[in-house]
Image (cartoon, rainbow, N blue to C red; front, side, top):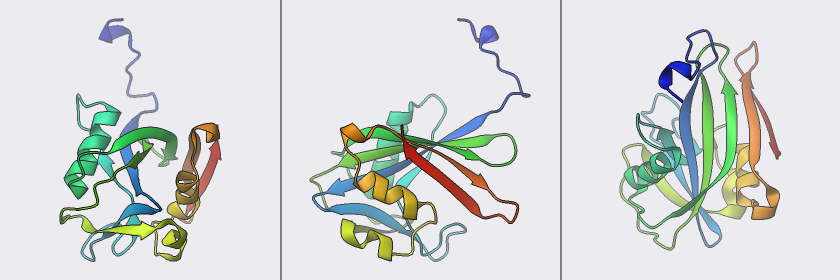
Length: 168
């Protein structure tokens, strides 16, 4: 199909693709604690990830982000979730959630914050980015039988984040 027939139109809803990656090693998950100087998520724990570059597949972006932020090279990544984020304007965001496994535990220093292998039983006691209190248990307990994590994040009038997640 030629590009002229793709239906590209500024009036249609558009999204910015982003990746969010969680890497496991035995009973631990790799999280990054945002640097105190970060504008967003300062001192809060999050997964790895970021934006997708032009001409880059979603999977390639996830692999690149893991390497750039942690130095991990040998990570087997699987797409386990897709979450739409309604920003209240155009464009919105679509978040591709990956789960990976690695036997490599040596990590690089990250300019994004401090990397930590956290015991899975302790993750909910940490100061997490707000959506992770619902998302991370689903990621940790994910199995092929669970299906994909599907969700919609939206913002309330007061600016709070509403998180709706399920398995599809």
